[in-house]
Image (cartoon, rainbow, N blue to C red; front, side, top):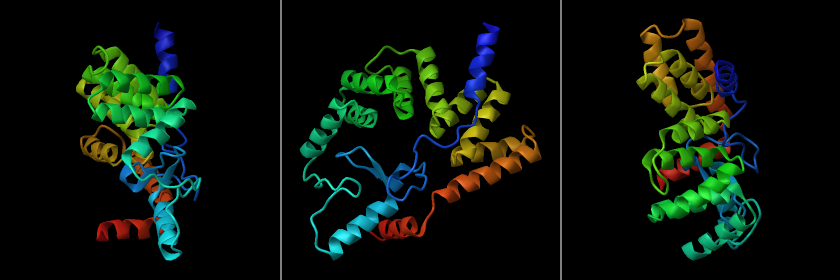
Length: 245
């Protein structure tokens, strides 16, 4: 059992190369952890960064074109019903991202049983975001019986897959349990993926003497590099346009 736990930790505390958000399929730059800065297209389940989405909107307006998806050029849906139909078509194709979207819709509608069914299938297909949402359902006891062990298991699976918020939450749980060494490890990994909340927690930890100056400095540099990698003139223009609206 001890060796099994050690092997599990080796996997759990390995720094992911990138976050589970991945790259924008158009500009190929990493997507921000802030999901308000990107849009998932229901027609193809592609997540488009704000910069590329905005550029497409400008092109459509200037050339007086019909509204289409920036990636696959499918006509834009004209109603929520059409949006849901698009998602279900992707679900039927075993698209894990579409399953997560349908799960979130069912959750918001109060249909927790269906929410659990969709996200469970997506997690079985290896989607890190699905593991995160599944952990939330086990933690809340919605659509499934409350199970703390399964909540933590799926939180860990999400973290292993590069889900920064799942990683941060694991750090918070370890801190609550008094296991500060593990909490710090989780926070460092999340901060290096660009998680601001983890970086803030590490600032407090550094002031409290819980991590070295060298480790804190290395984490600061990695965090800044991760954040900078998500920036571009197009994205900045899109963000300014969003603020102006």
